[in-house]
Length: 111
Ligand code: 5GP
Image 1 (cartoon, protein in one colour):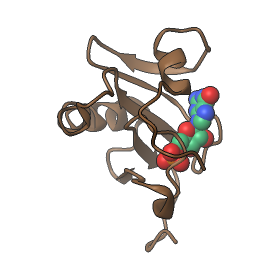
Image 2 (tube, rainbow, N blue to C red):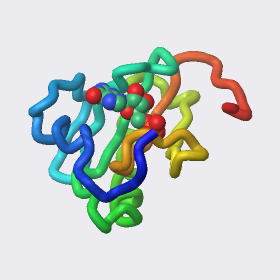
Image 3 (cartoon, rainbow, N blue to C red):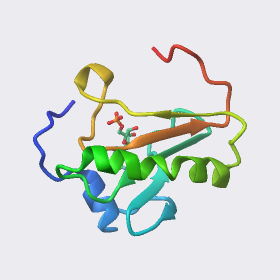
Image 4 (tube, helix red, strand yellow):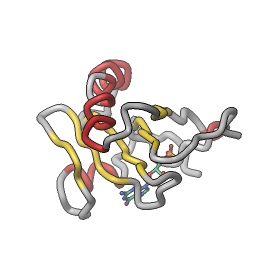
């Protein structure tokens, strides 16, 4: 697990297309792409393109798009939106991202 240094992360390279990803939605503010290590049949990461110092704004912006991702993926009847925040919650990439999970029966609590 990395520390939150404020440095650029791998997600910046995904935004710039330096690193390829399976993009399902993109606009000027947000990017949605499939997680490389999916924890459910649908596991999409939804990120604001601006991360630095704007995480609260970014969260508000990205929150508008999670339903859109769920609609695109056909999981509106049941999906989960998760933000892992900090090492104790297993955050591994320090660029704000919403996990959008679905396509199977999800357990609660997630553990
Ligand atoms: P976190 O643990 O920080 O909440 O979630 C980070 C997520 O990013 C993990 O689920 C991990 O699988 C995903 N991830 C890390 N590196 C890459 C990558 O290079 N490409 C994609 N598509 N997902 C990644």
